[in-house]
Image 1 (cartoon, helix red, strand yellow):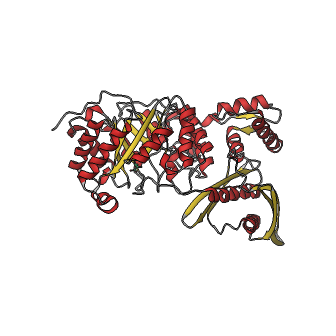
Image 2 (cartoon, rainbow, N blue to C red):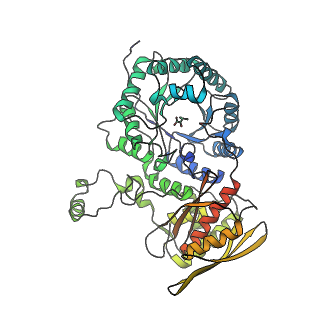
Image 3 (cartoon, rainbow, N blue to C red):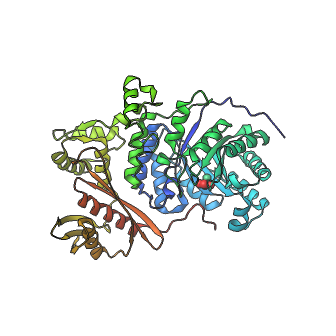
Amino acid sequence: MKKEMTMANNKLVIFDTTLRDGEQSPGASMTGSEKLRIAKVLEKLNVDIIEAGFPIASKGDAEAVKNIAKTIKNSTICGLARAINKDIDVAGESLKPANSARIHTFIATSEIHMQKKLNMSKEEVTDQAVRAIKRIQKYTNNIEFSPEDAGRSDFDFLCAIIEKAIKAGATTINIPDTVGYCIPDEYGDLIKRLINNIPNSDKAIFSTHCQNDLGLASANSLAGVINGARQVECTINGLGERAGNASLEEVVMTVKTRQDLFSCETQVVTDFIVPASKLVSSITGFSVQPNKAIVGANAFAHESGIHQDGVLKHRETYEIMKAEDVGWLKNKIVLGKHSGRNALRTRLSEIGYEIKNSEELNILFDKFKDLADIKHEIYDDDLHALISNTSNDDNSLNYNLISIKSSSDSSSEPHSEVVLEKNGKNFKSESNGGGPVDATFKAIEKIVRSNSKLQLYSVNNITDGTDSLGDVTARIEKEGVIVNGVGSDTDIVIASAKAYLDAINKLSNKTEIVHPQDHE
Ligand code: KIV
């Protein structure tokens, strides 16, 4: 049956999946309190839906989703569940405290996934999807269904299963290009044909979910919107499984900047985009490339003389957006060495971090004073780093850095001595190395004996100037498990030691997790 697509709905729903698909990026796993901090900034961004996690993945993720559901009141909180009872029940329980909850269930529909992964027929897959959607109604009527790998699925089968899913109660139909295989014309056309051919398509919102394997995730999502999709699934900085997901900032700013082409709008408060980007990058250790659209350090910088001259005469000669509209100027000097506790507490709250009690305030205030002694001018980014360095995930089995003494001079081999503490006990060690960082890592490894491999080590300055905090990411791998550690300090050897220890602690706390694509 063919029916004309209507596009009366001019609201584009922004479904942020940084805390679910983003977290599936190797090494990007986050603790519960880190997820909550990001959720608070997503709420300030005014995203419509926050996919907070995959609650069956682990007890920690179920708890994180529950805490987010308890705390965030202005965005709908969503949990992912495979189309099986236990996933749905755990998601439903975790979402109970939410003001507004959604459960997102999925099952694969491409020939290759059904045959090789699920070993199920089309009928079995359809029945399982319908059963899952009915079970979700025990918990909520806000139900999203995804035919996984829709981008490579048979069109007639997709129409048939989606029609049944809507009839069973699904209110959002998400069309995942799970392997990032589609190109924009093809994906846009798929959305249009589905909406036009499924008889009850007007009873659901169609959504895009595009992976970035060919670098087309944002372009594909936008093609979907032009062709009738009214929800986009996306992540801050385009974080996500493998090459990532559609980037929230690119999608939102394209729709805003090209209102001549899009017949819909988002309700995102765009001046929180850059703060959100910086927070996600500092928590996950995935730094943003300088030439990344919207949130890269060079996104609004003009190097060539001709461009600079043009921009000074008339900004729009070379700029299509204003830097301040996406939050670039939010990073002002906020505090200094004379600022008091109240000023610190107030500014932390403004950037999305609520201090729980006076003990926490005292710890942060001491660290703030130490930093202000060295750095004088404290920016929002410094405060984010300060919080990231002050973990509230109490764990007596973590190693803490007590002291470090490292030396490098041009005439002798670099040397480092470290003292770590774990469970009330101190451990000392020393080592030489190729440089002070290498010597420090070797000294730490003598104590912790992680036998992990360092996969990535990177240093960035958080703000300008040589007195800036250095932000270090250390990614380590052991037996296929990858974790990122982050650390910052005005001394990059200390920042490196903190990042390495953070990674070691994450590796040893990592429990067995279920991945959404694992089949039972
Ligand atoms: O990429 C994918 O197919 C997914 C689904 C669970 C929506 O992440």
